[in-house]
Each structure stands twice: as structure tokens, then as C-alpha cells.
Image (cartoon, rainbow over the protein chains, first blue to last red):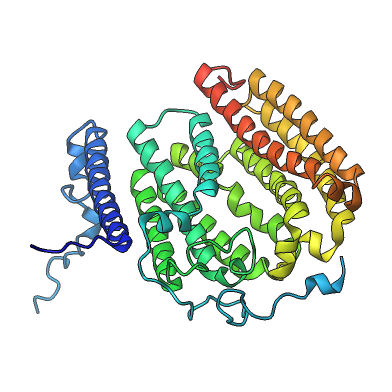
Length: 71
Length: 328
């Protein structure tokens, strides 16, 4: 028969581990909630594409003028 | 106040380590802190003030904010306040160990290692600032970062052990949360939250000096240059009265601002009169009279100061909730 000794330190450890677990779950829930709110608040779904899916002429390097570099 | 009373114990009562003014690294620790010890590092009572005033700044601000974003913003401000507390306890562990009021805190009592408190403080500060930036605005996040840095560096590391004006200047850190709350809601600044900051800023010195009058032996032992230790009771009482009267016009200006209203005006007038009267009573007494009744008036003023601040900000939130703000 196994002897089980429960020390006060074990209780503290359990509480600490439980606390860290709860904090991690809360953190995930918060990030998820923030994502949902931010996406829903966009209104227009095109907004979610934002910068990345819009043509950015200023980022296109200047094309060489006609005839330049032909010689 | 005699010089003898300013002579602190040269070593820490609990560990025998010399008081260096630097974070303690050689404290014996059990390494088995409970969750409550880590929560205690965040100074929950100070956090309640931070949360309440930040929430008032956020609620009183014009416009509406998504409730979940508002919740996350207030949570971040609370965690930022907690991070400041942990960094403060890490740096001040040596003086906490010699003050009766603070010697049971997690670090001086050996339940949490100083390095753990430092790591927790830095991690929570980074978390709070980044999350506030995501939930509200970069501006609000920047203000929160400034607040944490001001409390941890300017107040804790620089002013606290050097000047009796420590809590006057350092009080700015505790005064900024309503401004952060307002910035989270609006993305900018305005006069009303600046008046809220001014109210907390001017309230802090008489609040702490009233406390210092009846726990001053503690500060003397820890070599913290509170006004009571460096200039004595009389000067402290003069300062308390001066600040109590300086608070009145700020309270009035806040009540007359767009976020104020009849409730704030009435509450401000009543609380201002009570606070001035309490300060007057404390000002008229001398050390002998205070010791005779074990600092009853000073203790009453300290408790009244708590009610004063909470009631002011509760009134501001009530105006917003009831739609009775002058600006609506």
C-alpha cells in the first residue's frame, strides 16, 4: 500500500500551477476575443486585406525610360 | 525629530545584509511561493485605485468604446500598475525588510526571490503595454509605458531615497491612469483628464503625509526621507493643510469641465469641505496631542482621503452613466 504524504508545499505548488494554467487560458481567450472584435468592427471585409492587397504605386521601382540601356 | 531617530539599523533585521539601496540578491528564499505571493507583489490595493481612476477616465470620455476593448484596456492598465508594484518591491526589498508595515511582503519574508519579482515586473509591463497597443491605441500604450517607467525608475530608484519631495513628484505616476483610460477611449488628450490627473497628483501628498504622521518610525528606520523625518511634524502638518486648500480649485474646475455635472459639483463641494476641515484639525494639533489619542485625527484624515478620491471618480462615472455631464 502506497504511503501518500501531503505536505503544505504540495498544496502551494498545485495552487501555483492552477493559477498559471488559468492565466494562460485567460490570455488565449483575450487574444481570441480581441481578434473577433477587431474583425467584426471592420465593417467592410475589404478592410481586412488592408495594405497588403492594394496596389502601392510608390513601392514600385522606377522603370527605365524607353531606349535607356539599349546601347 | 532627533538625529538619533534617523539612525537606521545598519543591517537588515531579517537577514543581516547591509542596506545598500540596491536590489537584494542574497536573500534566503524558500522557492515555494504560492499564487497569493505573486499577487501580493502586484500591490492589489494600489491596483484598485489605478483601475478605478482609469475606468473613470475611460467612462467619462466622449464617444463609445466596444465593451470588450474597454475591458481589455482597463485590464492592461491594471496589469501595468501591478508590474510597477513588482518592480518597486524588487528594488525596495531592503527597506521593506526593516519597516513593520512591509516586512511581511513576499521578498523580505523570503517567499519570493528578488529575481523572480524583477522578471515578473518586466514581463507584465511588456505584456500590458503591447496588449494596450493592440486593444486601444499606440498612444495609450506609450502613456502606460511612461507611467510604469516613471514609477519604477523616477520614483522608486531615483526620488524615494533622496528627497522628501519623493511622493510629490513620484505621485505623478499614480495620477496618470485616468489619462491613459481617456487616451484608450479617444486616442488623444483633452483638458478634463488632465484635471483628473491634477486632482490625484495634489491628493497624493496629503494622503501619504497623513499616513507618515502615524507610521513615521517605520520610515525613519528605513532611512526613507519622508517629510515627517526630514522636517518634522509641524512642517508636515503645514504642507497637508496647503495641499488640502490647493485641491479645492482643481476639484471645482473638474466639476465645471465638460465631464463634470451637478453630482460632481455637489460631491466635490462636500468632500472638499470635509477634507479641508479634517486637514485643519490635523494642522491645529501638535505631536503631544496626537500621541495622546494615538493619532486619531491623522488616521481619520487618511481614511477620509481615500473616500475623497473614490467619491470624486465615482461621481464622474455617475455623470457619464446618467447623461448629466455639462458637455452632453
